Length: 174
Image 1 (tube, rainbow, N blue to C red):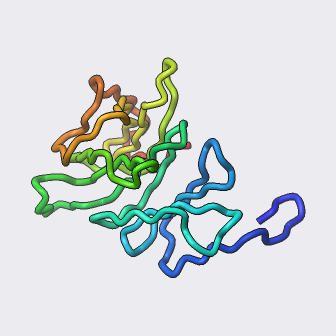
Image 2 (cartoon, helix red, strand yellow):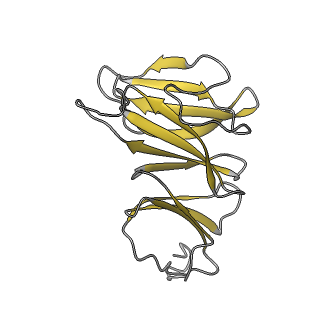
């Protein structure tokens, strides 16, 4: 959609339901979508008939955020609940390397993680700000350059910093 002319510019041909989408922070022609078939697709809006990249995931994800450099995505899912069978894991967040089209690492949390975003703090673009069901915003410094298998807790470069934002759940951040 072109905001200035109020005209449709392109229609992406995705056969699955789109759960969420996010535009690249460095290239306004690249769009990431999370779809109902447990996939992440990267689109070039100049060629919208077929996704440029299609990454199949092991669970349905509900949130997506681009790394400021445009080479990585963070995707988050709700994997558990009160009677979770995944070892007490409530939510999972995966870091995807877009150059390799693979999951670089998975971060597991024993609490609910809602929306999140990458933020450059102290000249470090690898900080993830996560809203939680504890009414907090967790700041994790995630190393996007190293791989790791499933982890039972967030693999970070340093201890997370917690900001108390609300007396109830925090859901949104921008």
